[in-house]
Length: 216
Ligand code: AP5
Image (cartoon, rainbow, N blue to C red; front, side):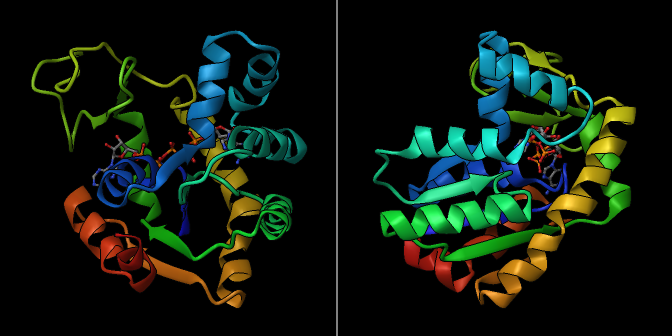
């Protein structure tokens, strides 16, 4: 079972991927998280990725595809992609690689959230520097300010969650990622879910989809 979570920045892909991965056992692959780990480690890939991410642009397709293929070459479990693919070239590259390796995309779940909610979600997002748990100062605050409820780690704001960078990320999303809705609709694996409810409501809606149930 291989599933793609598709949606605008801030639509809740990371939040729901963590929940669904715990529920189904699928391996959560966030290309954004991988790039941020590479940036923190100051690797050559991280340095290259940072020059794009800090401006709200996508990392080039060839760099991203190679990174995903290298990381997942020997992975045997079902995959839950969060933030990948996000261009037609990446979707076609994933299809070609899946054909070679005997996998297929079973479901693409689009988290539909109105624009007006997106900016608030991103501006108020905080993430645990230790375990990656995602908070929101308005809708999902930690019990103690600046401290992760789960592991006691420090909560930080992402460098690309500044309003000017968010606007550029939304522009890149509309231009390059939104065409994937039509691509996967034609492939017959597309499901749209209302992503504007609570994380629990969104999780229940995604978990009820036919393909996802099979993965449990
Ligand atoms: P990435 O890390 O993938 O960021 P993104 O796609 O912009 O998505 P976000 O992580 O910002 O949001 P999300 O949808 O995961 O929402 P979240 O669950 O955190 O990518 C970052 C950058 O890396 C890109 O801009 C690009 O440069 C590069 N990159 C990554 N992948 C790439 C690729 N494939 N190709 C090229 N470049 C790539 O939730 C957001 C907030 O809302 C949180 O505060 C959360 O608590 C809150 N929230 C979530 N759900 C709910 C809910 N149901 N109700 C209320 N609040 C909620």
